[in-house]
Image (cartoon, rainbow, N blue to C red):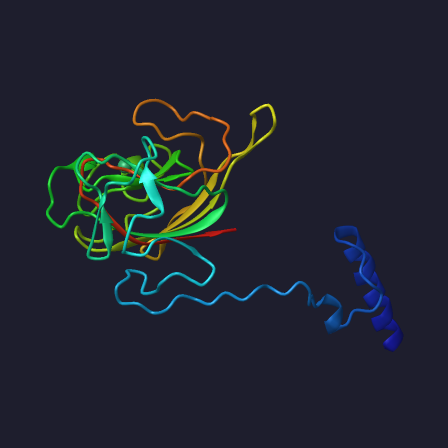
Length: 255
Ligand code: MG
């Protein structure tokens, strides 16, 4: 009986050889344990009722807006001081102020951002609570009041604007705070400017996945098709679309 088990074991072993890397002759529990390196410790955020996520930033995040000032932001147009209004722990699109962007630029990251479309509903379709979050200053994750507000599906909240509609509509009511959690990997280009692989984005809206490792095909213009433009690091940019949409609790972790 013992001999038969050994034979079967050898047969299983040689079958495995054809499919995977050679196995050491004798496996122990310890032989597949990895002890080095040790993942570094990150302290999670504190519980906070003044956030929609219920948590502040984790210890290794770069805080882009903590409710107090626009020190991390400038005008996207000319790099001058950002002119959005700050109050009640939020930053809000100000009339005629234009887009704002982070001073710092990023490549691959995890982003947490909270937004609130105006409680007082004005306009319809794309005119209702419209803003947007541009990855690397180029690729728009749409922000819109999409609560009982029909528009084209690839332009509603949670869409990659005019490229990829959200899997579901999980929008909260106007005036309520909402969350986006984004995992983004930047495209890479060779020295001739050819794209080796596209940007990829995963978006979780109010705790529900709406984009699952979506390949972004290029820029996200209002008119026309996506354009592929070689680039390096880029900022987080927030859109002024003439609606007083607000943001808070914005933090990012480079990955
Ligand atoms: Mg927009």
